[in-house]
Length: 143
Image 1 (cartoon, rainbow, N blue to C red):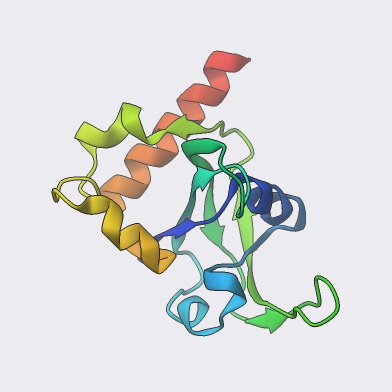
Image 2: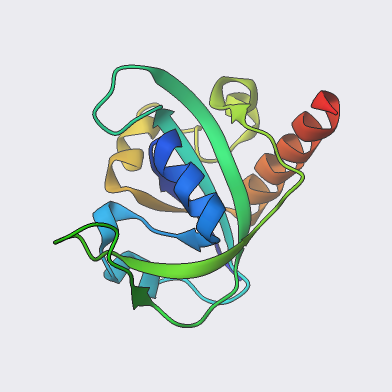
């Protein structure tokens, strides 16, 4: 089993949560082909919207890849991105990356943010668990 971090605006994460899917790298197929059923998946949202200036800098969703199939769905005319099915952890709330930065392997390198530009990054199982636990704790703290 592997774990992945997708970098997507918070607005787009809301669509993914509603539709129980993962979509990364502007809808490309190749990144999704690296994933397998059971893999962990986390969305990190640097901004609220793709073209906006409002910063979010939070882990915004966490779940597990559930489907083997990679398929396309027309979101609007001319845009038919590739997707995979995901079961999202329902008891999860966004957590700022700043609160976990010292605990993650992802953020150990000095230029750790550079890797996020690829849109999909493999993360360690420990990082996945740390993020998942923090998001679950944040959900419970809000309840």
